[in-house]
Image (cartoon, rainbow, N blue to C red):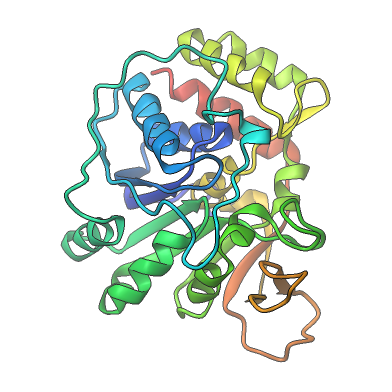
Length: 312
């Protein structure tokens, strides 16, 4: 099997930047194999005002003229609980970005914009989802006729075991369990990188030091990394969302299994838990391909090379 995808794939990104989201956006938009046509910020790591502004900042920095359509301000049914304790108040503190030049399109909803891209695309579209699944669920609900034109939905989310949002829930799925449930019941080709894989693929100090030397891009990421509290700058940073991009571009570095993923929405203490059924307890057909490990040296090699390419 080839280590990279063979054609330029049309892509929509749903994101809540967030420092690791910023890295993922940079990697996706710099790739020669992906055609990122739309980015939809959603409330998650921080509120929608900041996730939208951060998307504008990162695209302006990289001089990428990609349509931005803001999405949901809160989960479908629940109150927003952000992750500013990890990403800082604004989501991307630590670097003085230039004034954004891209203006978000607020004339349509994120779901409408996704519909426009999918129905006019020459090829099936890949959705890369690196935040709560609120807008993806709304899109599926409102435009079910589009689903045959979606190639796959690649997500960073869920947990194989314990969580980082609740005892058993990971942030992206736990923030909006009802949305996650809709997505996993959609019948789409779903691919998932759980939280634990992000903790396997740490960016170690030596790697951060390499990246620091990559011109203005390296300086920007190094400064963001120094403020990021997803892991430790000294003992390794968890680049969760970059792994979703890696799963699209270099799938061979992952070990995956086809299995059932069920989302708990009713439990008073367990709402948002992703039940990734690795042992067949649920006796249901597989509805997702789930990464269960990653080749750490291969990921680091790809990550450094991909960051370097964003500087070109």
